[in-house]
Length: 315
Image (cartoon, rainbow, N blue to C red; front, side, top):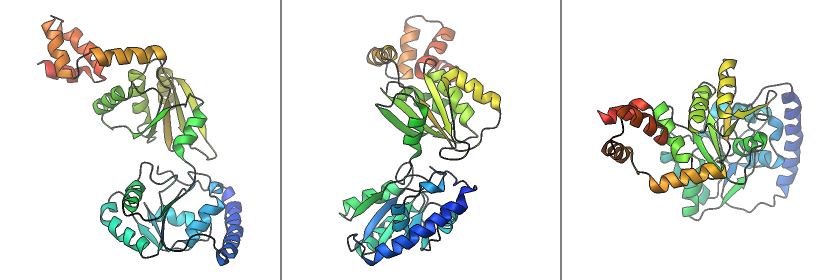
């Protein structure tokens, strides 16, 4: 998730820590116990607070022959804080397809290649997954250097049940598509986790409130930063509260409580007995003599779509 690294008063102290750690890494490098040869390292970086960069993260970045990243400007700022100098190369979603073969050739040739996302764990909602997949297919060595994850941090911060959860990433931007996707996710027996832009979070919370009126929802923003916040309420009430705030700032994660046993039972029964498609449901309702206005209202709720979309099919 592309979260900005906070620039606050901690930075100077953290940078000094990085320098001290760097000295330690240089001493370790003399007797480096890591296996010789090439390696693809997926490195987790801070999602806000620079002090979350572990000594092992710094060691791996310093020891890389090349560092692949989504945005060289973002990663350059992180490296500068810790005095790390390493060759940077852009490897985002737009260019990853053309870079995979070359990256694998480097690893096979003995290079230590590190990959970072703008913030957090690479491979989660970013192109790092494609590199790992390709490297494993070629039986090349891959290692994961753990770091913060906005998904798990938000789940913990929400206080909602998380025995099971489903990470969706970003929901569709268009209201109709977003409603349809939420309807598809409704029967999942666990919490739902979404990333969202601060500019779209109110619209997303409104859609969630319409889809899950009886569920609690948590909005977690600015994770690990100075103004970290978790606001939690029933879906409709949370949407109202956030709307009344006006401008929302910072990266947002939305956590939706899993369905109750009663809701889950109803959802499963509907899936088992109801029509599979909107067209089938319309035909079934018209055959039964249901008024078009009532039919449109019922099916809009059932399929999680705007009534206007049902009316278009009825005409």
